Image (cartoon, rainbow, N blue to C red; front, side):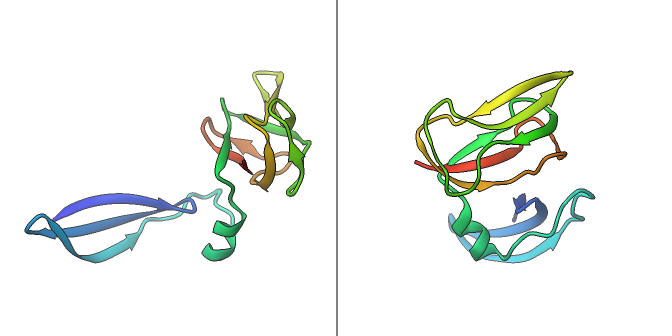
Length: 124
């Protein structure tokens, strides 16, 4: 038996997987860990998956969202400003890494984010 922790939509699950003869036979239990206090209700999985793009835009550092410059459905070019993130009293433009269409904006003005947090996604 192998144990893993899997995170789905910000909720961590402890999963135990049984292996027999080199192949997975069953996953007998999944126990939900307590959700983070800041976790917001999430749309049902099929809807959330449909909105996610194939290019993630992540926070390069922890900070606070000062402005959202793009909205879902906008066409953007590489280098276009999507969001403004304040970190250490400085405003940092978060830009599109490549040309595409904004699939989702995952934050709002005033949100505090950690380094690596997914801020938005694009469809290339």
